[in-house]
Each structure stands twice: as C-alpha cells, then as structure tokens.
Length: 173
Ligand SMILES: [Zn+2]
Image 1 (spheres, rainbow, N blue to C red):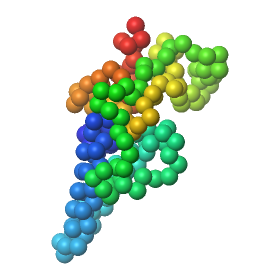
Image 2 (image 1 turned 90 degrees about the vertical axis):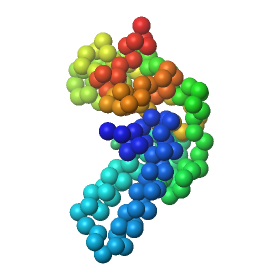
Image 3 (image 1 turned 45 degrees about the vertical axis):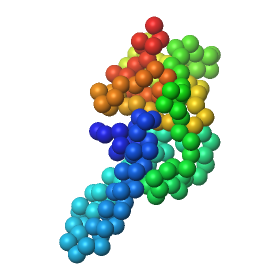
Image 4 (image 1 turned 90 degrees about the horizontal axis):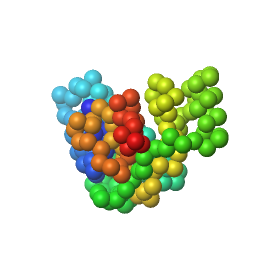
C-alpha cells in the first residue's frame, strides 16, 4: 500500500495528485491505441477512482468546510489550496477524557451497536479516545495510515487514520 495511491500522509498530497494526473494522461493515451486492453484500462480506471475517492475520505477537505468537489484533483499539478506546512501542527492527540455526552456515546457503543464513529474504539474501553476537535490546521492535510507507518513514521503533530496498531497510547502517557 503506497501513500501516493491513497492520498495518505500530508507530505505526499501533491505527489499523489501529480501521479493521478500522469495516470489519467497515460490512460487516455492507452485508450487511443489499437492495442488497448479493456480489462487493463478498467482496472487502472478503478485504481484511479479509488485515489480520487480517497482525496475526500483521507484528507481534511470536508472538515475544512468544502461542500463541493475540488476540480483540480487529477487535473492539475497544483490542487489550488494551501497545504499545511511541513513544520506546522495538523492534529493534536486524541483525548481519553470524555464529556458526559461522549461518555454516554462510549457506553452506548459498548452496550449496543458500535455507533460511536468519531471515537477511537480498539478492542476494549481502555483504548477508547475522543478525537473530536483534534484537527487543528486550517489548511489541507492527510493522515498517516497504520500499514504505511514503516514507509514513513508519523511525526508528532501530524494526523493519523487510526488502526489497531496505531494507538495514541504513547502520546497519552
Ligand atoms: Zn485507499
């Protein structure tokens, strides 16, 4: 799993978009050739659509208040929005201290269906953190993903997508 296929990791956002732009041009070229394999084209198109979808699900585009698509995704070398600075904090650690409403949500989630989507739920109640309001940047960022942590470890102050091995436990202690 590469960050440039999933709009993961803040510092790869531009590279991911440029890859998408190149892939789109290659795909169009391939389609115009007589030897185009429909199954190859379909597979590549599916991968690219996945990356486009990840722009909206892995970056904070929606949290920044955007209600429309970004027409520059896969279309230009510049996304047309300011990226969070390399040395600027994007996320603060999630909190294990809940408001009454959040505590009720945790209790309800463990008592019934796991509906506490904004809460980090990892196996037991001891590993439940509230991540509401943990994103502090006003600029575009993306999270580090568990399976990509070997590729590039998450620096302090950057966001994560979560995952069983990617706890904030160390940060919380
Ligand atoms: Zn993905």
